[in-house]
Length: 349
Ligand code: TYM
Image (cartoon, rainbow, N blue to C red):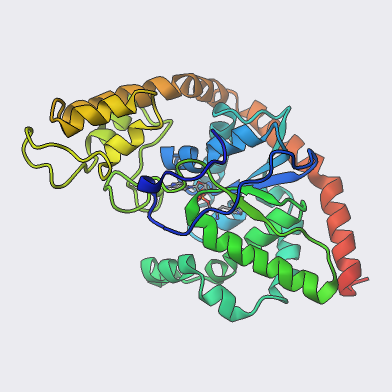
């Protein structure tokens, strides 16, 4: 179920999603998205973005990237970064990215993106970068490490996308401000040097903001309020059973409010009978613990085939590395063409 309007009860941010991409958009339109190898993939990544990566690979020429340059702004251990990069690639393949139908690669394997970022920085006012919400947040969360990469992060995203002249960008709602800034940067470039790049457009799933196990903040690798997709079953059970539900439901006999209960909200995405489950909560026929146990079962059942594929692929790292290498190689002609055009337009040759 790609690209429909977000469920109103499941978002933190009331800004409406941009109009979905027209069904008759030309087949050669490119789609690009990136994911950081900064932690284990969680159901927020899947429901908010990866499901759309998978769905869109048949509709557009799709390119997906594990953004290790971006992860360096927070992950500083080389071995950890290397391991997580391969794990993230494995996860994306296990969840349904098919190297026959899309291109999967690692950001640093096409380092021209760093050159394009620099060129973009020369059309980007510092004030635009300083007002980015994620920058302000990181500055507070990691005051001991306010590195310059945190500030220039969105310019690298803009470069990621338009290096391939992609315009369709499946992401979760937390990336909306970054995407908006990418559009502004591209517009600034096009204004100064002439029409060169399409303006990237965010595309959302039905779950653009998945809340974490705390029921308040978005599910996030860096907060640690996640339900992981490929963790051992016991760990997933522990994560789901720790979820905060409707905080006003104190006694087992109190009626529940599925609209504000994150466990009930997640049931929407793991079965067709969520309305019955919600009814059980409203009438106090079922308790929070029952509903959580059922969610554990559903999540494990839903991801069973992917978990199996993940285990197989993890046992065969050369296969995954081969996919990534072939991906980066396949992109080379596109990158060369874009960079030649940009250097020419900017007076670098
Ligand atoms: P990252 O690695 O934080 O997340 C990967 C994708 O998962 C989505 N997502 C969520 N969606 C809904 N609910 C949640 N709780 C949730 N948590 C994560 C994210 O929105 C994202 O789509 N800056 C990006 C990576 C990036 C990128 C790009 C994306 C780099 N370059 C170019 C698009 C285009 C990031 O940190 O995603």
